[in-house]
Picture 1 (tube, rainbow, N blue to C red):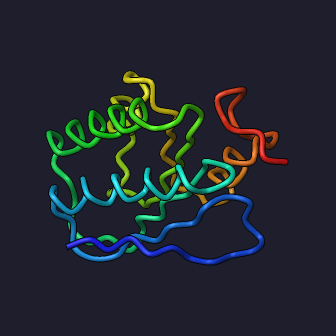
Picture 2: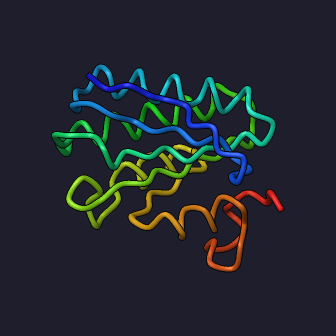
Picture 3: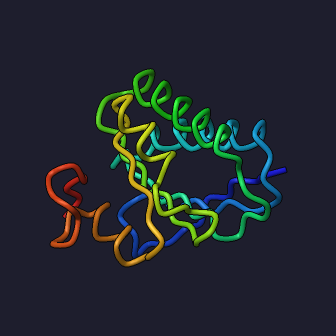
Length: 137
């Protein structure tokens, strides 16, 4: 079962959420629901979801289902919410399937294996990858 914990970090202008526990589809779906709920309440509407402490891995079909869920969540919440997921390979696969599926469904989401890159994208810095990231600074 997965647990989403909010980490208070005054150095981050966005919501920082750490996910721990063993992966299963039902609790992963709930983790994304909780994440979008918290993002909707956060002044910036942005979050870093750190999944580096999650054990076990989602299957390819689970990645598709989660990407679809995130797309639906993005459309059902206030516009402009932005989510960066931080993980490690092999949990984060090179194809970034969850990201591709979610972005195809209008979610502003990116998946990263480096915390600096995720941070830069969330604050709209020079390595953010263009205008798709939020501008928090």
